[in-house]
Amino acid sequence: MAVSINLLIVDDHALIREGLRKILSIEPGIKVVGEAANGQEAVDFCRNHQVDILLMDINMPLMNGIEACKIIKSEAPRIGIIALTIHDQDEYLFELIKYGISGYVLKDVRPDQLIQTILGVARGESFIPPALTARVLAEFSRLTSGEPYDKKHQTLTDRELEVLKQVAKGQSNKDIANSLFISEKTVKNHLTNIFQKIGVVDRTQAALYAIKEKIVDI
Image 1 (spheres, rainbow, N blue to C red):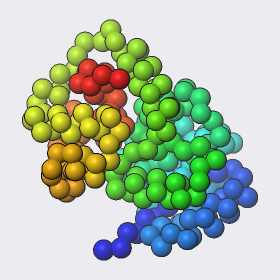
Image 2 (tube, rainbow, N blue to C red):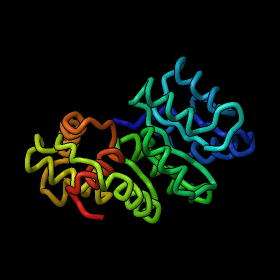
Image 3 (cartoon, one colour):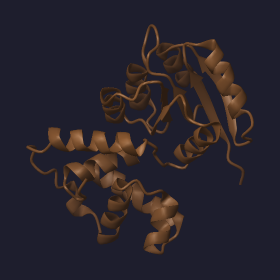
């Protein structure tokens, strides 16, 4: 079955929106269903249209990408949000992760990498550049080092723990399936159970949970 992804481009620069639309038009599985010039327009669009993925800038007038992400993920957790920005500061990424983004991509990304990130997020995967991931996980671990264990993960099966560890190491569903000798569908089923048991909504939050609870080491 062909992939069909409804994507909304959110950026306050019309030239950038037009450029992104042209780049993404070469991928038959991606359909740009709209554009928004700020976070409020993005929120309004998602409330009235079917959107699967948001490609969203951070610094915008009226409402920035962080605030828009917070609102959209609270109203429609299924929507995948990819931050597309010139900034690589930890504070931006840390805030966005807390609100449930699925990807964080710098604007110098190659077109093919951007398309692969969108397709991956549509499959339920997450993408954050490795260098940024290491810094954020280290900071998250530092901030939560004095907190008591949550212990929700004690309800996970041994196989679910194996899958969670792989997720925390940044492995894709395909990589996890190959390393554990199971199908990708089985991996997805395990992830659904894991998210429900530990109370998270996506892979990034699951990875942060695994670091906080010391299921894996950084």
